[in-house]
Length: 227
Image: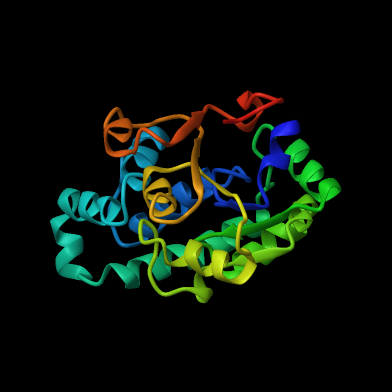
């Protein structure tokens, strides 16, 4: 894994990139809507296609499907808070698996003592629960959770905060995301942007810069040289 020595700071999203928790978010949204009297019949893949596109697509998609929900609760943040409470309950009883290739990468970064930071939309309570269930995440020393920045992805606020705290002049920085909205945030920073995972929508490639690197998983990254 020689390529990791080409960079001095690694930035990581969390859900769906390092840990397989997107299905728990999906179930939490289904449960939140069901408790309010609405049945969302999207498949998991459809959910990811919508939720991963930008910061408004899920809200707009759900309200378009359920106009009565908009009348019932027009403040999406209220619904998101309800979903998050359900997500935390589900997280307590769920197994948290690392995504393919993550274990090897995190161990190597720790061995080489290369700076690394998670920048996530999850709260500290959520990330603390994940780190208990999956202790290898503690190989990452620095964490920027939702309480630490103002504007969510695709705004680069969280990543810029991480760079200001942990980057140094002359550092070559690389960032990894599993969603279009996340990569759009990375593209507004000095980091090299890498999209990892399945591309759920054919529109994704068209909105990303030609400079964005893409691999289906961390296991598919060439071992000798990334760029």
